[in-house]
Image (cartoon, rainbow, N blue to C red):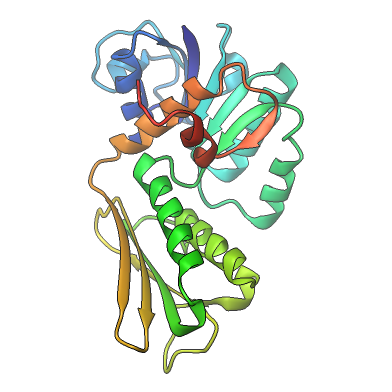
Length: 270
């Protein structure tokens, strides 16, 4: 039995995580954290999200949870996630972080914890999005890349703050590594005019309630176009991926892991 605390438990992903956990006999919810300024503090999280009484009262700070736990699943904000990582480090607990929008300084600080606690950080917890990374790497390695222009297009809802998305940046970073360039030297955002040579083009669309879509285009001047596309129609995929990671990380050695690491060992959601 894996005992889990959910951060942002009344948010869109938090609700899905709790609903998924309730159906899983191998996982137990032992804590639910929400914004400390929320007037629902102290209420039963099950009643808040429409699942009926779960006997888990919401708190505004992870330190207020007295129950013993194994891991935390965190879909909140960068500053909050970093504090929660520090808390897990002090208490020798694992953490799964699905938060996006980390700045370079924050990511550097996160890396300092890799030898202190086991944690998974992924900009996209969906299994499919991580599978297309392997496909994209294979394609990039096999093409005569100088003959192809590369475009990354990402679509998200109108309220998404960070851009490009963490997934889009990760895709570009991996392509750039294969090509032999630093990402920040070949990235072009919402460009105008003729294409600049030796660039990876980025385009971002923020509209409506689009959950998420990423498209990678390899287009040659000789008439070939290769497209890799991943579209999410239900946020439940992020909850599934995070719970898979929570199961996977149990008894793992201290380290900074991602969903690629999780899927290498376990490609079945149980």
